[in-house]
Structures are given as C-alpha cells and as structure tokens.
Amino acid sequence: MTVVAFIGVGAMGAGMAANQAKAGRTVRAFDLSAAALARAVEAGCVAAGSIAEAVAGADVVITMLPAGPHVRAVYAEHILPHAPKSALLLDCSTIDVDSARAVAAQAKAAGFVAADAPVSGGTAAADAGTLAFMVGCEEAAFTRIEEALAPMSRVTIRAGESGAGQAAKICNNMLLGISMIGTCEAFALAEKLGLAPDRFFEIASKSSGQCWSLTSYSPWPGVGPQTASDRGYEGGFATAMMLKDLKLAQDAAAQAGASTPLGAQAEALYALLARHGYGPKDFSIMLQFLRGAAAP
Ligand code: NAD
Image (cartoon, rainbow, N blue to C red; front, side):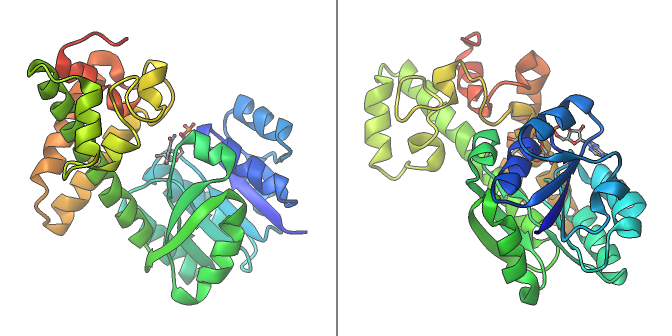
C-alpha cells in the first residue's frame, strides 16, 4: 500500500490528508500543533511523533506549510536527511519562487524527485478533493506526480520546471486580487449612480466587464451564486491570505524587474484592509470597505 507522509495538517492540509487516506493510502501525519494532528487522526491518518518518523519508508512526502522559511527548514533538517531517495517530494504550500527553486535543487542534488505543487481553491476544495494543482517539475516526473495528487485534485497542470508552479500561483492570485478590487469599485460606483446591484450584475456578467470575481464570486451579497459575501464574508479566501500572495507577487516582480503597478496597488489596498481588522474575513469584503460600510 502507498505510504504518504503528510507534514502540516492545518486548515488546508487536514482535508488533503484525509482525502489521501480515503483513497486507501496509509497517511502518516505530522504537525507541530497537537490539535491539528488529532483532527488528522480522526480523519483516518496515523499520527507520527516527528517528521523523521513520518517520512521513514514513505513513497510520497507532501508538505502544506505556512511559508518559504518553514519549507526550507523542514526540507533541510528533516525530510532530506530521513526520507528514502525513492520518495516523491511534493510541496503544496504557497511560497516564494526562490525558496521553491532552492528546495528543489537541494532535493535533486540529494537524489530525490521533487516538485512545487501549490493549489488553487480554499478549504472547501481541500475537503472535497477538488483542488487545482499547478506543478513545477521535470517533464518526465509529471505522470507520477499527477497520480500522487489525484485524490486531492480536480485538475493538475504542469506549469514548467521547478518554481513554475509557484510562479503560476502568484501570477494568478495577483490577477484575482486586482480583478476583485475592480469588481468592488464597479459595484460601489453603480450604487452611487443609483443602479440596482442585481441589474449591474446581470448586465456586466453579459458584457465586457465579465470576470470570475463578478460572475462566480460576487462580492455583493444576494447577487449571483452563493459566495462568502452571503455568509457575512466568513470562510472563503481570507484577506490575510490574499495579502500574503500579493506580497509574494511584489517581491517576485521586484526581483525579476517586472512592472506590476496594479499589483502594487492591490497589495497596498489589501494591507489597509488587514490593518482595519479584516484580515480573517473573505477578501471580497473589499466591497464594504470601499463603500465605507461596516462589516455586516
Ligand atoms: P495553516 O496555518 O492552517 O496550516 C499550516 C500548518 O503547518 C499548521 O497546522 C502548523 O502547525 C503547521 N506547521 C508549521 N510549521 C511546521 C513544522 N515545522 N512542522 C510541522 N508542521 C508545521 O495554513 P493553511 O491555511 O492550511 O495554509 C497552508 C498553505 O496553503 C499556505 O502556504 C497557504 O498560503 C496555502 N493556501 C491556503 C489556502 C487557504 O484558503 N487557506 C488556499 C490555497 C493555498
């Protein structure tokens, strides 16, 4: 039976590890948080006492950790020294491109096949096994990676070589952050001009302003499909998470010499939103902030 070591079973990792277990794989979970680990055990995983214990003899090692420094440390100190060289190493965290490339290079030098495989879709998709994975890896390794990710995935796309998965993730989320702000501004202006939000929604959905932030994730409650805005902006994709991804995009843009003026504006606006205490709320709460309305 395939043995999966799962390091980091927090908000996202919990559902992902559970889906690996549901697929009949033996999942050895490890997390610094005892509460997170206990939830993983309830979901069918086996608790490991350390990362070394989790990865010993594993076929696949999956990490779902907060940020680049965590991934660098966990790989250098625990995974590379203790996992068998035959293990496939997959980092699904959202981290900076440089860290992803550095970790992949260290893994390759140590004789491993490794990939960055960040995800799109929040905790609901993690729980449902319907995440979208964007993968940075050598072409020859992709089929094996796709198979390893299958119980957690709706779609898995190879973006290119190491780091390309993270590059795709931050470019996508920068676009999402910008388009959500644009959608919120348009709703706020429509309101001031006396246009009913549902009329604006219907017209823009069928016009050139159409975009995912409008038609699939409307920030205006009661308009369009059910979204976080209908639940008081609870759940969904947290403003703090969007801010993290926009910062990664700006750091990458500065290093690569790319011009991303709207990405910079989006980062500044989401930083302002977080400073006003909206960090845990869904990122579409930008609408209420721009309207000057208190959070519902
Ligand atoms: P989280 O904080 O809920 O989970 C991270 C887990 O890692 C925690 O349980 C923490 O205890 C554990 N951890 C930290 N350091 C560790 C270590 N050294 N060893 C073992 N465990 C350790 O965060 P999350 O929401 O699950 O996000 C995880 C990653 O997924 C992040 O990179 C995030 O950007 C990305 N992501 C999140 C979402 C989302 O909607 N939450 C969506 C897409 C991508």
